[in-house]
Length: 289
Image (cartoon, helix red, strand yellow):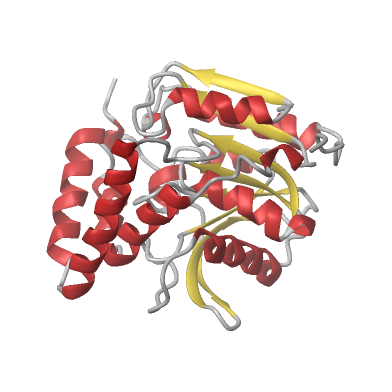
């Protein structure tokens, strides 16, 4: 079997989309023009839409229209001087859906995309028909080691802001190619990051905590949990599952990079989970406080 680097990756059409009052971002779309539901894909930290979802685009496009965007500071995402916040990313997602005129969508978030998706529901409930949360959690920091790591990310953001980071980006993208055996064209997108913003994003993740309100989610939810995850520990993923009542919960025997590897089972699990959410009743009662 060839490596992922030898696998032909079919990418949907992509274009720049200007969001009034916010800036310009990059969006991929699969639109069949048949009134199908929409799935919006939110990538993880230090990734891009293509890096996270390239292997899944075609399979998901058989069941729904697909929209995927690069987040702020990542790839070809929005640029600006404002401090990165997950809330601003959630507002960006809502603005993209409005600009494209999709109507309510199933919001699919991987890793950092999970908190962004949760916040899209909290801040823009009318735009969310369902949630699919993959390899993610309701919080990311609960110990001294975690706090130290996320504080270091804040310091790295200051260093990156002070000097050019393009060379570092190329170094990281080369490492991604070697470690994950990805097509170089996808991994090279990492070199285009605004690394100061990316490190700010890591610090924002460390501050995120949805445990007080996540149980109130009132749309169909699907989950994908990775059993050997050392980036988002499996115990945190399962704790989030306990606060929700998923209509489908897929469990994969893999780590945080399952979305990057063909043959990992991720794409099949993603399609099944999205399909279960799409087929579920439109809303469900929230859990009592």
